[in-house]
Length: 170
Image (tube, rainbow, N blue to C red; front, side, top):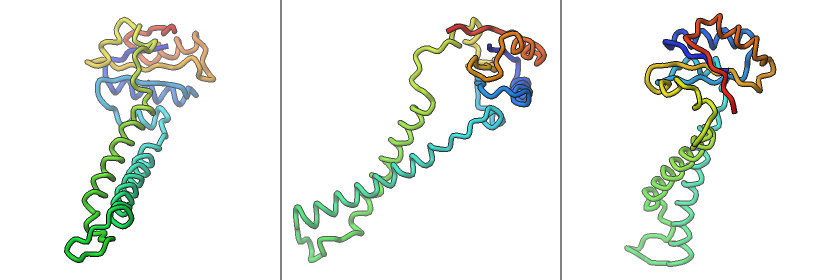
C-alpha cells in the first residue's frame, strides 16, 4: 500500500506514526534525501564503511607486495646503490591502489546493498509515482510486514492525511 504526501514534513510524520503503530517494513520515496527517514524506517545497515575499509586494505597490501615481489625477488635491479626493498619508493603506487580498491569496493557494495540496478519495481505502476523524483513524497507499507492487513493499513494511511493512496500489485 502506498500513500502520496504533499511535503516532506507530512511524510516524516506519517512514517513516525507508522513506526509507533508497529509497522516495520516500510519504504519512503522522495525527490531529495530526508535525514530523519533513515532512522525512522529502521535502516541500520552499516556495512558500507567496513567494506570500503577492507577494500582499501586489500589494495594497500596488493600494491605493496606487488612492488616488493617485483623488486626483491623477480627483477633485482641495483639502481643508485639503493636496497632492493626500498619501501619509500613504494608509497605512491601503494596509495593509488588503496584508493582504487576502496572506491571500486564502495561502488559495488553500494549498488548491491541498494538492490541496483533495478529495472522494474511494482511501485512504478502507481499512476503518480513519476512525481516522486520531482515534488511528491511516498510512503509504502509492505505486504510482508507482520502487522499488515489491507483494510487496517488503508484506514491508517487515511488518518495520516495522505493526498492519495494506491494499492501496489506485483
